[in-house]
Length: 345
Ligand code: SF4
Image (tube, rainbow, N blue to C red; front, top):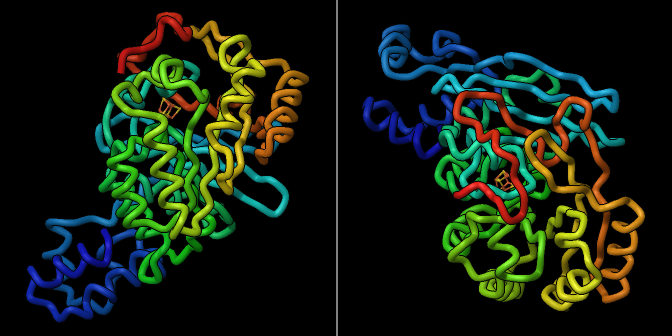
């Protein structure tokens, strides 16, 4: 719950307003696991509150540990589905990659989560629990919303979770250390940018509108040029860092024409593009771009004035690398997926 929600709760119970702040302290600073631990609340109030609310910290079901130190946690959701969360150590940084949905309706052709289709949204509590309940919580330096799901398709819960992570009444993390990744549907993106000042990573994957609609079927109906124009406009009075992501697919989106058109599309923006090696998975017949060609593609982008980096692959041996988070559940698509044969969104 946000401080606003706790304030409403206090008003409904006819408690003094400061009670909301006390409750947020207990939840986010003292990390209580049950209402009965809230010792400055009268026993009768605790009992009444327990009838309608619960703290419900849910420990991970499993942890898988990669040879490179990456960890993948699985959690059960209220709907008895399973979600995955990756924890990635990298030098001084320890990055937690949160899921916001069970599956995803965008259906990107290179993504195992997309092949699950959408099974449901996570509540703000289920999103926060991925941070709250792991043993490394206090050592986490960065959080990215890049796990299962399109965060802006679950806007209200994601905004509440971002508030609880960043506000002083919550966990108080720096906004500069949180990044939300999205395909960038303009309307929910506008609402998110108006309310949350965290970093943004936009999933681009091709500079060509029609091709993007094939690779990211859930972006049909959205105009790429309109999205870029909106980001340029906002950059005039918004200092947050916006970056772009580009999964490299052999023979699909990795030609030099793609590099040149990407550089033209983003020309003049203060941004960076992260090139992500594709990680194949069973049932998908796309092929990764060879590393040497990724380097040539990056060099071409840089030659055209863009800052470009190649993201290191992490957690591949435990299926925690980019695009591989997915949980085997009834209803998961099993048919082969390619750029032409993509899952309907
Ligand atoms: S890449 Fe992101 S938006 Fe695309 S299907 Fe996977 S989880 Fe959804």
